[in-house]
Image 1 (cartoon, rainbow, N blue to C red):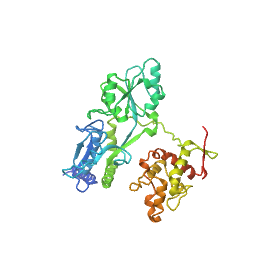
Image 2: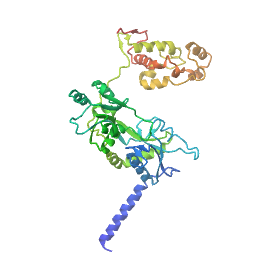
Image 3: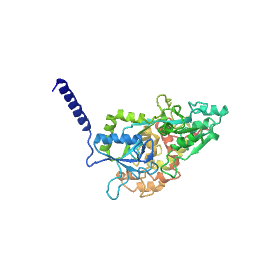
Image 4: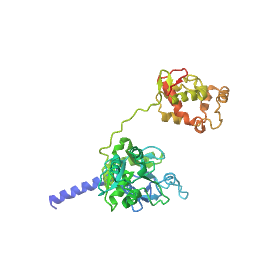
Amino acid sequence: MTALRVLFQLTLALLLSSNIASAADFKPLTGQTAVRVCADAHNLPYSNDKLEGFDNKIAAIIGEELGIPVEYYWFPQRIGFGRNTIKKVDPETGKFLCDIAMSIPDERGLYTPTDAYFSSIDAMVYRKGEGYELSQISDIAKVSKQGKKLKVGLFDRATATHTLLENGLEDQIEYFQMMTGDARINSGRIVSEALASGQVDVAFAWGPIAAYYASVSEVPMTVVPLNELGTDFIFSFSMGVRHQDKDWKELLDKIIAKRKGDIDAIIAQYNMPSLANVKQTIKKKRVIYTVENGKVDDKTYLGWRLFNSSCYVCHGENATGTERGPDLLKVVKDMSGFRFRKKVLRKYFAKYNLDVPERRLALLSQIPVQHARGFEMPIWDDDPYIRPHISDLYAYLKARADGALGEEKPERLTK
């Protein structure tokens, strides 16, 4: 045996052992025999039952890393998807129908998201060779003024709607329904059918949808990322798992990190709009309250009135707390309006229905202080007089907590 052949065999052995070690980096969870994916069978570029979507290919990577097959439970990706897939138990087996949902918004809600694996933005698509070029939404108005009134197609509540209306294009918009009665037809039809046929001249759609259907169309098209909308309109997507499946999420995060290059390469095959030049969104500081010389805006005044009609019983006339309720100024000082709303709308009084302050005070006077905490809040969640004014209450308390407003009764600012 020659030295060269020996060297070759040693190199081959090292490579094989390296691959085996790599494949053994991850092991399925106890009892896991397959990567069970919840997906839509007619939802390209994400997924289909021919496994042509990028999520199909990324799911295959997960199966490859764990050394187990990938199985699918198909259900239309629309309202009720999570409830009828990853959250639903098969009555025959007693197991969930599937364990992972792909392309889920990167925020905790119905699912716990893994680390994000792609991001995108909405896009504008138009046919090539029509004698004009569009690089931003305002160009549609310019072309229209030059004599070619472009018909615009978009889905109701699309992110481009506001800008289109600002440019005076309301009479040129044709609105499309996002979901039809046929689950086999998805939003890509606005490009593949409406734009390609000439029903509309410009179409707006979510970036992956716009780019994919433009790329496979027989009609040449140009895709323009709506980078003018700003970074606030870039949305990231993850894989979703059930909240209790923490070990599964951790395992998926490790696979996503290890195979990031391969995942990025798959995503790149689907020509998603570039995010290279997205306009930086300038955050405007939200005005929660207005106080000028002791006078307040209507919102803050309504909050003062609500506090003194419903909250003073437990929190004191100055909101600084009593033995029955905490100092709200300390509570609100570093609390966001969102958290405040969630806190206030919690149902503490489902059993006693003590929404009337006098009735609540009478009960509190009859029970030991150490037991009173469970009766602090009424059922604001269902109160039509209070629920709409939670943000007003927050404005008043925040003004007090920030020191912008004193304990005295405020006066209204004149308009």
